[in-house]
Image (tube, rainbow, N blue to C red; front, side):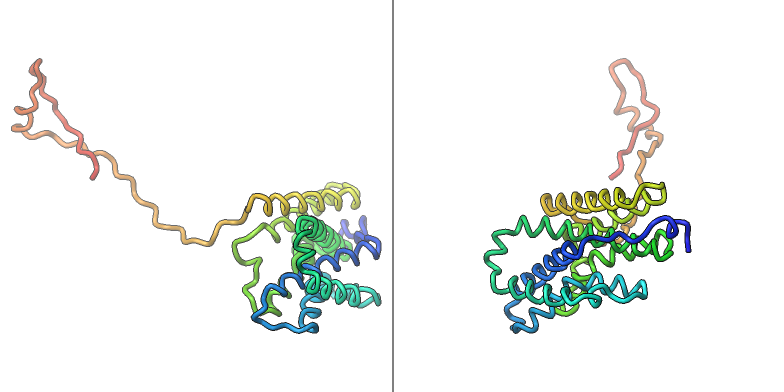
Amino acid sequence: MSTTAQTIGALSIPLWGDLIAVGVGSLQGAMFASGFRDRRLDLLGVAIIGVATGVGGGLLRDLLLNVTPVALQSNWYLPITVVAALLGMLLIRLFRRLDPVITFLDALTIGLFGAIGASKALALGLPEVPAVFVGVVAAVGGSILRDVLLNLPIALMHVGSLYAVAAGAGTIVLVVMIDLGVPLTVAAIVCVVVTLTIRLLAVRFGWSLPEQRELGRIPRPRWPRFTRAPSAARTAERTDTGAIPRYRIDKPE
């Protein structure tokens, strides 16, 4: 076990806080799925999408860490995610009016899941880089499962708001602060604030990473060529003072 693992424990939040987080994720997953009416999802389909979005990140995190998923250690997680998913489908117009609130809660959830995932990985003895990876997976894993179940291109791999980047930045800050001896609670708060800020600014201003592109061939610079002027040209180019220019500059085409 690493020194970091010996000095910190996994970040824990109250059960009700975790349930709110997975509920918001489930709600957003159902609202997203409801937009694809051509898929003709039934109530069970919407519930499955909601559950996968809400608890998917935590499930992937715990599978990577080889521990029993938290969602399977309580009777509350699955019912909460199912109810939130059905509400998201039935009351989609209402929740779309509350979109700024949902967006804020979603960004907050990303930060919390990232902090919990990274700190849990460190507590189990993982090195810093894998801990950051686990934190990012915990933060965005639900959206990956959602896209896979809906047979859609995975949104994280395409141009869009900085979802995974926000989670990655937050978890990196957390890991660095813990290595510097900062208390876990303080590091987790900073992690959440950094993630929340980047995500909200990306949504507000439409920030995204640049599209993939090939590194094009770098054109070679074309320098002016200095050549000796022919005698006929020198005769034609005599100045009033009789000076004869020895060279002329041929500009590049």
